[in-house]
Length: 272
Image (cartoon, rainbow, N blue to C red; front, side, top):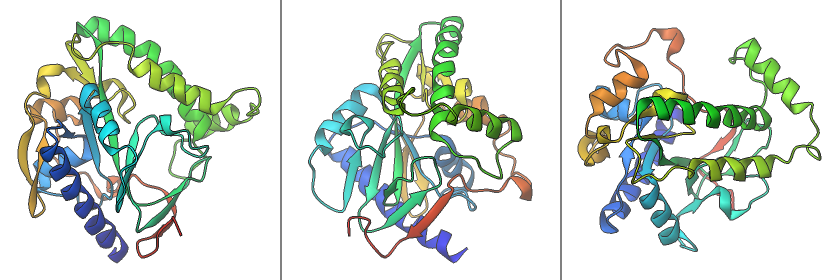
């Protein structure tokens, strides 16, 4: 419990920095997923959670990457296009270089505590078209996820079996890095500006994360702990689409954080 508080304190510092950086550089971002849920329901972190999810419309996401390229300092951005051999995430991560984490995945990526920075991409001009386009994309994405994940106790038996079978295929036959780059390319297939439906295509809730673009609207300041962050304008519509009755507190069995770390060290840098 004490470690979770310390992790959230570091994440809060990162989020403050990121919010101010985006304001100074006129970059649009939104709290997504559990971070938006926490802001709306708890005015901060979900008490049992320990991650931060943020989304940027694809044009802003690309500009953030350009601005952060070769940037020195405590917080650095890494993307799948940077080419690291142990980075298998189809989105960017902002790291605290004064900390160390190792996640329990197939590739034991050693970095710092992080914010997940997702691109918000277009997927179609109608709900019917968006469903059709996303279904094709999701088949490829699910296969990629099965290749880079590891078996976990709290995952369903069916998912663990799929991961096991997928990983029986040798790496020299299926190149996971090529799969990653293909997923990133597929995310950009439909122009964001000309799409009426958009969302985080690589999110945990799959098509539930696809909503009418006007749901995102103007970034709306909302209290989060002791400061403010930008949230989706139609937060109720967005959260209802993903969670249903998002006001309801889950039972104890479902009060779990999303991370599965092998190691967390908030006092030592992974760069050392």
